Image 1 (cartoon, rainbow, N blue to C red):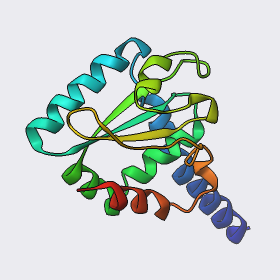
Image 2: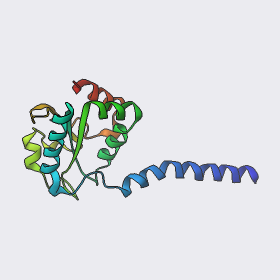
Image 3: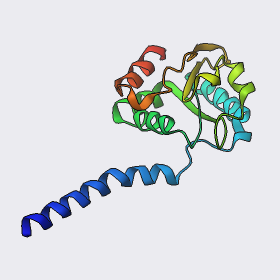
Length: 158
């Protein structure tokens, strides 16, 4: 009986440990209101110019599980410090219930939203596109090796 209780307690602790980070993610919206897309990118470009960094524009939505997985990977220690050193990250919301908004911003940076999200564009501080994910490269982020995020960051840094 005691062994069963220990097992049940350990199982409950494991479930809590796995679900608590997801609850935290769900509580804070990753992507701002759709109306902020263009202005937020413009602000990121100004910040990049002042700090001599590149900009990563992350197109996605708060409903998108793969977008949340990408964010988790960006926040991992091996990525977070590198990201902060080399990039200004800006999130552009493509819609609250699917891909319905910010098509103009995506087109400006050669992102075909029909291929799915998350989709990233890397920009110089003057807005010139260095790289744009045109084939849904991170669209299935849950199935990808988390190291792919680090490789992406390393590849497009100055």
